[in-house]
Structure formats: structure tokens, C-alpha cells
Length: 367
Ligand SMILES: *Cc1c(COP(=O)(O)O)cnc(C)c1O
Image 1 (tube, rainbow, N blue to C red):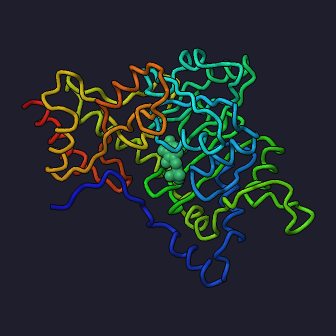
Image 2 (cartoon, rainbow, N blue to C red; image 1 turned 180 degrees about the vertical axis):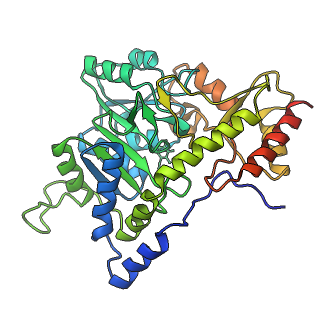
Image 3 (cartoon, rainbow, N blue to C red; image 1 turned 30 degrees about the horizontal axis):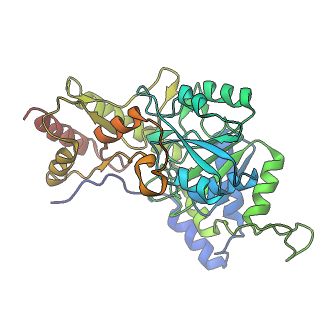
């Protein structure tokens, strides 16, 4: 039996053509026309001035933090319910990771919890737009303004998601995205930082390329990084950007079809969409309610046995060994993490497949 994947890239556009062009022209490394095009296309897509392409979404976060000079003694607030990279990027700078709980309504970082975690050492907040749904940016930006903090949006899972009509990645001083194989668009591995700030743009480019003095080759005035993206990755990116609106549209159709196919099941919770949000449903995700007849993990096993691949929600980061010293209380994240799961969400998924997945879930829900 063929397993329906949780995710798979869709590479049916100009990917091969542009990639071949890189190889045949010799522009395979980190200079070339696709880099410039990709950075411009992506910045335009987000409605910002600059896009700085990097090697992956984790280096995007690290470079954003390093650019601000965040380091030992500083504190950065992140949601505990996220992919580990959000916390790791802070850890790499030697700053302290401070976790905040999330809100049950959107599954994203709770602004009230952020406020409780602010100290004199807090330097930045990294809201994550989890599973494609934007975080509630207005209160987060208001808190940041009040306490003079930087906001970096981790938009790795939410390319094109709208908060009050505006695309994510355009709210904080910087936004970061990932182009890993399962994200909304992919470059194989890849990432980008978005910003409207000319000075940050300059400094991000400088640190991305070993902090080499622009006017003096091989003269390095600081310790920088090699976080460059290759022209080959960007070639895939340019081809993917030609299809991004279609991908987002398909993600939304998939979500609608799941929502109607699963409607009326009282023992599951469907994914949120706040009145001010337009989610891109990176992963179509549901929660099992306490009265569901199977445990979450048993349900995942049975789905898999029926040919439907799936993922559990992320573990709250504060529970994992590198970060377990955080003694805070995170009841919402812990509850969501134990009850949540991602269903197949690839843009290649067919309507028939969605219908059959809904049938399987309906029968498991009524055991
Ligand atoms: C995927 C992801 C990242 C990291 O991106 P990579 O490209 O895999 O390094 C960071 N944050 C979140 C929330 C992610 O989902």
C-alpha cells in the first residue's frame, strides 16, 4: 500500500530548467543571477524592501540575532511550542532562551505570557507563526515598543500568511523564513531574512559573508559567518516563487476540504483561524479532545497502518534536555503538544485522498 505523505515538494515548474542553466553556465556557487532574482521576488512577495538569502532557516534566525549583537547576558523570549531551531538560534549566540506559553485560540505565543517574562535583560522577542497561522502581532509589537525590544518573526512555516491583510515577515524589524523540503516553497535547504531597514540589510549581508570589509578584499573586521545560499538553491527558489500563490491557494483548499470532511466530529478540534488572520495551513493540524476513544499516539499508529502518514505536534522545547532547566509553567503548550497532530498537507494531495483520510478519521473517532 502506498502511504499518503505528510508533505512532499512540488517541483513541476521551471525548477529543472533553471537548475540546468546554473550547471551549464558554471554559476553554481553563491554568486549569480538567481540569487538576486530570488531575493527581490521574495521581498516583493512579503511587501518589504530587502531579502537576504541564506543557507537555511536556522542560519537565518542566527544571523538575525547576531546582526543585532545579541549575546551572553541577554535574554530572548520564544514560544515553547515551536520547532527546536527557534530556541537553538538564540542558544548559539550565548544569550538565554526564555520560554513563553501559547494561547489556546491560535496555538501561538501568548502576548500576556511574553509580558510576564520581560526583565531588564530582555532584548528581543521571536514570535513563531506556527503551522501557517500568524501570531497576534499587534499586542506583541505594542509590548516590544513599550519595553524597547526587537521583534524577529520566525515565519518558517507561514510564507504568505496574512495578519490583518498584511503578509507575515513584514511586521518585525526582521522576519526569517525556511525553504526546507517540506515548507510552503523549497530550495532544498535554504532560508531568507526579510527587512525594511537599510542598515540591517547591509549588516546582514556583511556578516553572511565572513564580515569582509566591502572596500578591502580578505580584510575582516569582525568574526562573521558563511551563511550564503547558492545560485542553484536560488534557481529552485525562483521557479518555486512562480508557483507560490497557487501553492497557498491549494493549501487553503485542502484545509477547507478537511474542515468540511471532518465537520460534526465533536471529539476533535479543528485548526484555528482568527478573525484577523488568513492562515496558509502549512500543516493541516487537529487536536484530539479528551473524550476521543484512542490516545493520540495510538491514533497516529492506526492512521499510519491505514496508509496515512502523520506527525505528532512538536514537543514543548522546555521539556527537552538542553532546555529543561526552565522552571516556568506552560500548561497550554503542554496540552496542545500532547493532543495535536499534523495530517497529510502536501499541495500534491488529491481531493480523493483527503476524502478517504476523513473517512478513516471518522471511523476511528467512533470506535
Ligand atoms: C523549519 C523551521 C525552522 C528551521 O528551518 P531550517 O531551514 O530547517 O533550518 C525554524 N523555525 C521553524 C518554526 C521551523 O518550522
